[in-house]
Length: 372
Image (cartoon, rainbow, N blue to C red; front, side, top):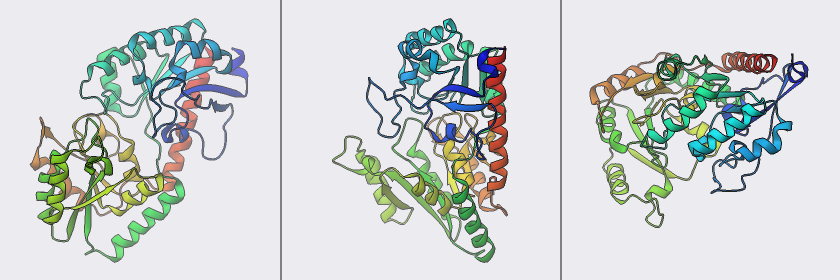
């Protein structure tokens, strides 16, 4: 056994550390034994700093940082942010980890990068990380099967942890259960959020979804979008889309809501206000947004691409036909979710149990690597 494995603290260079998925991998009841300590995200010294993720681009993924800080951590665990590197630099970084005897764990969140229309650059990086990593983790059986088929590697399948905090989860779900019981004829709200129109989000879903929702008396379609896409003074303004969305709102096809990025609290309340959340994704793999919606007790309609429908049994899937939505499958999915007789997702107690199991699973993986 190495000194790292027998110590009471396992020091993890987590890439990143301050991100809600990673924060919710630790026990909610307090530290387990051995204690897992994730290093704080170093302040990026180069590149364009992200206003949404202060850790990006992650300095830990440079060979220089590994050389200079190897005495501060026992293993590295990569989640997100490696798209900031080119394959050659990433190969240098993982080679430096191997030279210094630092194990690497990689959680395969995205087999397809939702921010890149061209899958090639992301696959080039996966071709570095997946063969090299000492242990692989992914979120669904379907993703594990893809990894095995393409790279011949086995991955631990550990589900996505909760996104909402337990207090918000209990409050929002309780409110939904009360409304469902006391207001069976309430207006049903179906929501689709276009965000800032990242690469995998398509507004082509709006018109067919509007036609579907209009068939249900007492149902309303709410379309959300970030303000910069609608603002003529902003470089991200999309004139034709802005006009289409505004006209549809004026004609009563949908309710249009333009806003800045949600805070966490605003996101949770938004998701809780919906009965059904439709994800307008043309490609991708897994979704934290989907998990947040389920935490809020909101039924999810997701595309059948990637592994979205594998994240929870309650998710209803629809298909894309190239750039167009398969309207029949979308209609069936919306109908199924509007007919649900229960609040979907896991309740707070179930999420707490799941989080403890996730913390223990990660601890076992880390301890096993350091004990080899």
